[in-house]
Amino acid sequence: MAETDATIARVAVKISDFISSDPELWFAMVEGSFASAGVTADSTKFGYVVGVLPPKYAVEVKDIIMTPPSDSKYVKIKDELIKRLSASQEEKTRQLLERVEIGDRKLSQFLRYLQNLADSSVPETLLKTLWMGRLPKSIQVVLAIVKDSKLEELAVHADNIADASGPLLPQIAETSRSDTLEAMLNLKISQLTLSINQEIVILRSEVAAINTRPSRNPDSRPSTYCSRSRSQSRTLHGANGLC
View 1 (tube, helix red, strand yellow):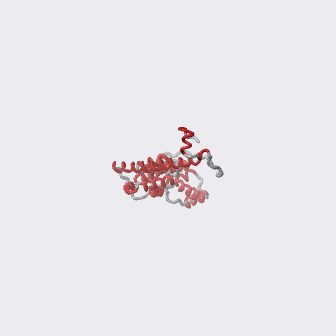
View 2 (view 1 turned 90 degrees about the horizontal axis):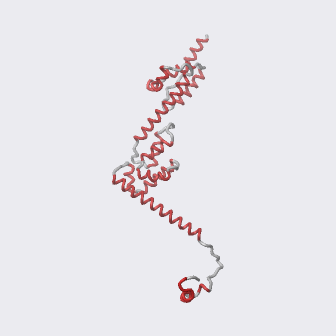
View 3 (view 1 turned 30 degrees about the horizontal axis):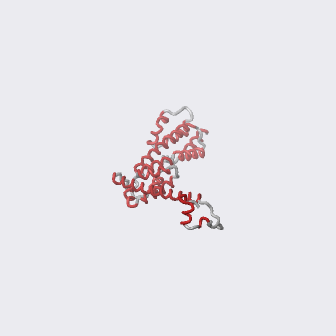
């Protein structure tokens, strides 16, 4: 009777197709099916997983299938399949992102396009590196100054720099690498940076002047002594010019 019940339980287990893009989710679904069917034996779980794995993914854990451990077979194949496929998926995504061209997109649009292509297995730091690596070198140089900013903020800065380049923007979108374009873009960026620095210097000077300006008493009046005519002042004080 017990053997018949076990057979019924095995038949009742329904396992969905393997989700290669999210093996962790798939195993969670499988374990839900095991729980519903009352399957608890380690070897039975292992057998189910091996039985439904598509060949191209079974190859990823061939060593475990061919020589399974004496115990915890299911846990072993689960952990290794998740780890190996996740690493493989990240590398495939990286290769995909590296092949994508900016085209006629704005630099912030290009970032969002990469984010849509990438999945949760790609960390933001890697996405940031890939995105910045595809930008024109002159823009990379400027963004390096604010490299610790959030990714979305960097995208805004990149758009502003590209917009300031005016007619060069279509060529930037095509990621042209010609020496002429590079030289022109370098000049544009240098001019923009110089202009910003000059504005900063002027603002700082104005703030410093305001902070150091002595306060005046509105009731004070010029000294009668200092109000004398220029000729009298020169005669009295000579070259020192003091009043």
